[in-house]
Amino acid sequence: VVSIGTLSEDKYNPIADSYLRLAGSATSSGSIVSTEWTQVGSSVTGAFISGSDMRATGVVQLDALTAGVTYTFMLTAKDTFGESSYSTVEVVMNEAPSSGGLSITPSHGYVFETDFTFLAENW
Image 1 (spheres, rainbow, N blue to C red):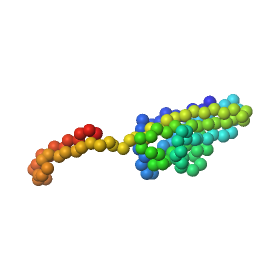
Image 2: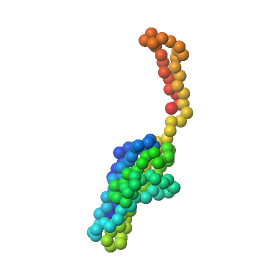
Image 3: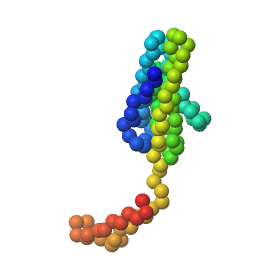
Image 4: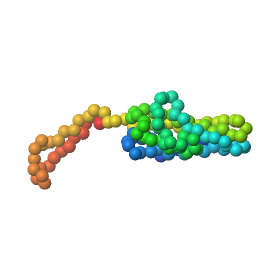
């Protein structure tokens, strides 16, 4: 049986030096001889920190992923009987902000004297 823990967020941002820990586990009536994380359905490369794709817990570099895309990661385990099992998890990448507007009134004023109003529309 292969299982993957619940993700901590609904969506992730593809920012530099940010990582996502995919916590998986595998059990069998025999011994587990191998585990492997793969990315399913797209051609992204370099998503896993080197070596973590061959462990039950994989570490993904978020800046290797594209904003607005949903990725499927699969953990496969094999046991001493030659049987294999897998589980998948979806990682949703947050989209960049869409167009919107910010207006400030009045357009001129004095610090600590003028009351400014900020209006953010269509965000």
